View 1 (tube, rainbow, N blue to C red):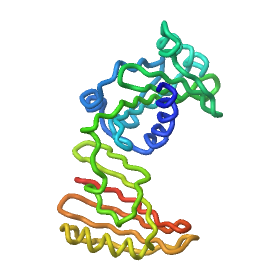
View 2: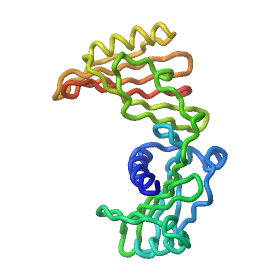
View 3: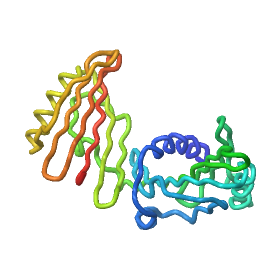
View 4: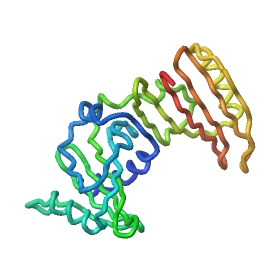
Length: 238
């Protein structure tokens, strides 16, 4: 189980770095994790709380005058355990060195690399085993054409607003997808405020911007091989 969480945690961390959110107070209310020890470093939030494919997570960045080896030694000591199954795991993918551990309901990951003359920089991420009640149906957030496959689903929160980013794929053309969303979202009270076409190496791409009250939907529809990708960003209060 530990190795499964370890592998999954690497995938979650990639998506986490894309989003910036508000303060740590929200994360403390939403996530039920033990304290995440911090090295001697300047630490700032990247994403205090977000949900990535149904999984609650948070990410911090740190910049330290300590070498990567010293940061790793700090976490080896902080996460030392009496049993091998609870001990941290380590791996290296240049230039990153990573140490990770499971504590309680949560999976903690530290990525560190050299920076400056003798210092280091890195990311601290915490992911929590999801409760079923946290998982929101993606097709209720955004209508989808039959046969669509969800590739990524990220819910992120900022000061005074909630956003949802969905990436899905299907076999219909970009034009057919665009027509579907104009019609279906229009029936739900959304109004198109902008639409334009772009050219990609695989064919035409279409961007739609729609609004409903204070909510805004931005859809980028592009062809990739034999499938079409729809990247939708839904914000309740832009």
